[in-house]
Image 1 (tube, rainbow, N blue to C red):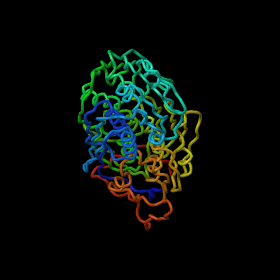
Image 2: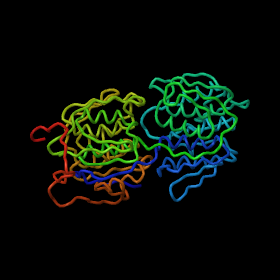
Image 3: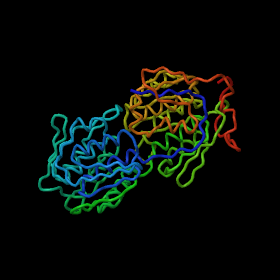
Image 4: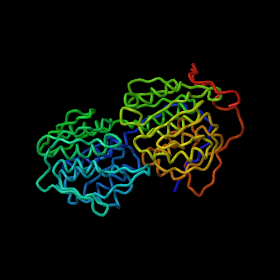
Length: 460
């Protein structure tokens, strides 16, 4: 088992390219089960969740080819098995998206309840509700979802909203199943996330008839069969947001390339509210440097909500940023109210955070110090890495297999933009500290340094 060892205090500078979206590629891979022809994804991210999904598909009988350039080709010409067992789906929640395609094509499916990050209860009742609306008989038996529709699925109208809003994977699952159903399906309360739109774009390339993508009302007209296609998934907006926050947190000049700024408008708005300047173009975002010894971000509240509001997957990273803000920030989590496993670890590093129900109150600025911390889930681990980048001294982040689920070679990419970070075996002790020297933040980072944020109080 590995850990990441970080020596904090360096402003990041340079360019980093965003990989294909992890959350988009998983349902797209599941869509390969809908056709007997190859589906090619030229820019699939090289992360653990993708490897796990490919194992699920192989267990169902799909043929998987991974090319040297990173492209993935999946062909489900023959899918003799319609059962995805716990052994194969336990590692990630995205594996549940094989339910809809298997039911649509094989008319039966047995999918074990999925695993994934420990971030609170994430029921799949809306997935089951959607399949029942399409005419399937669905039961939960011994931890398995068993569904059958031997006469085929039939289109219908349904509402898929839940207590925490629309279901992203539920919308994806039902949308895929409905592509091969008889007649018209209308999903009311559909998720509007870019990843759902991206899946719909892929299905349309495969011959599906879908309208209303990106809106709460999606209409699908069933077809008799789908064909193969090549589809490049959208850039990972959560990875992009994480690197943008890393640049802002360290006072650095980080240019995040191959991203979609329009998918991150709420994050950019909150950065402006915090007094942190940035530039952006059609496919890039760049943080503007400032002297972190004299200035810090303004406290800024966020509430996680379905897209296009602030994403739950950036909540932990934003909290790491707000530990350096001057004053009190309120962070409210409405998607997964228990998604605060990172709070105790940030407090171990010196953060002043108090949880109150589904909210967390962050008092800053805190002088974070390096510590031994434990990653509990994918995004929490990213937040701990970000905190380590600005902490005084050495931070060791343990259980980094969590971060490998969604970030491709994160330590190598952070190192390329100036971070002092290495991956080592858990049993190895390492000291990355350097001789005392003038802090790197005092060196000019660009010809023009903008000081957009709030001055820190004297002695902070």
